[in-house]
Image (cartoon, rainbow, N blue to C red; front, top):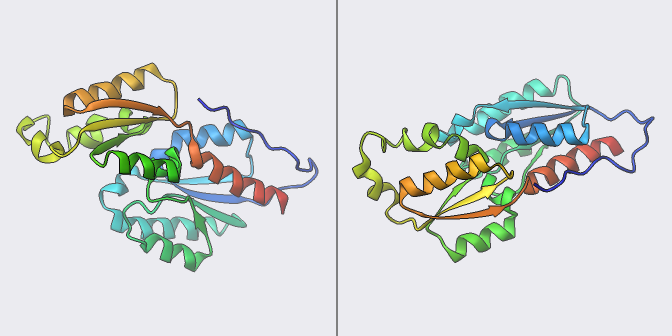
Length: 215
């Protein structure tokens, strides 16, 4: 895994303003590691349920509610979401709060890097992407909700146009890679892996946190 950086160039006597982050629950493990490794004690994170991705229309209202709560105790705010299927509605909401978010349409893009992801997708559009979180939760979030455990005949209808499963790995966990490989096998897809580390998730959080330290 890519080694995380530490705060540098800040005065030990300067107290940072409180930074509130609203984040997708699917990023909780990674954000927790970033915050801990960088000793960002001035950050408060509010996680929203990952299942909101099943109903993306609800994401802006949920984020808005969390931001409203965090404004009561944090001087600055940041949102650890991509657009995540909201068709720009999340950005409309964030403009009202004067808040920025992670760049990109989804976690695959900001893990891989925006330009890198675009190149990957253009090279092979029929790609099913899996992160550490999705590898861990594949049965719960993909296989069983689609009914493939009960009706395997639906596999062609759902994945007939896919050719590969691309595992965008945040860690070097052999157990997670085994889960991702098994997912590819069950879906009948070619398996590939790219080590992304935390990508622009780390970059975005560090930029927001260090900006507050510098104020």
